[in-house]
Length: 277
Image 1: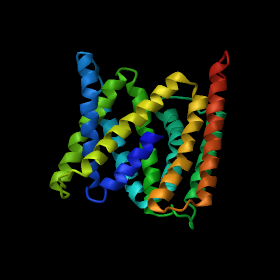
Image 2: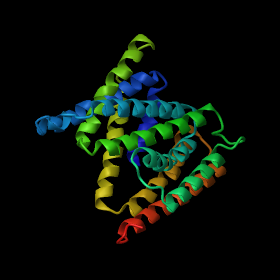
Image 3: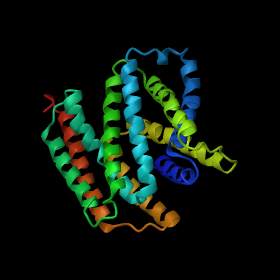
């Protein structure tokens, strides 16, 4: 949660001067520089790919999701943004059925229905998220879900280090070229350097911490904890940006949480039963 909060604060700070593409370039650059020593330690075995086109596809989809997220970070309250992000597991469940051949069990259908109901409450016509930014964030959540499905597919042949390295390396020119030739490149000042470091390192830390937590505890414990991001982000939004929390946003997030919690519990029971049903 500290990583996700750091990303949000740093992105808002950098967006006052830099374009979205320049911000994404620095994240990719830091990602490559941080992961490269681990790749070298393994004698570069991790970057020997057998599915480069899938790496390209995953990098493009993830990049689109990041653009949507940065747009949302500027135009939405942090509580609305975080609440809409909770729809990612629901989209992931649906995409996994079509592209990975996973079965859509009853608990997944229940979670999907609850999830979309919660999103509709958050995006209701009189709600603060009912605007272009809210719809863009929905698209971003869908793209993040697609990226997650492709990661699961790539883990069949690639290492996690290789997946992260290729994603950041392939996204480097996607950020640098538009930042230099289409938008006005802003040379970072001394005051920007800490935010750039927070932006890049917080993203890596957030994903590493989540993966590490899942190796130490059951998903039924870790997954619900992720929903603490809503009150944490709401408090940050209130203290730093004077953002008021819409009570209906909390209601919608709670409904999404209930659906996800039911799905996680159902998946846990199904996995622990002898016949898998």
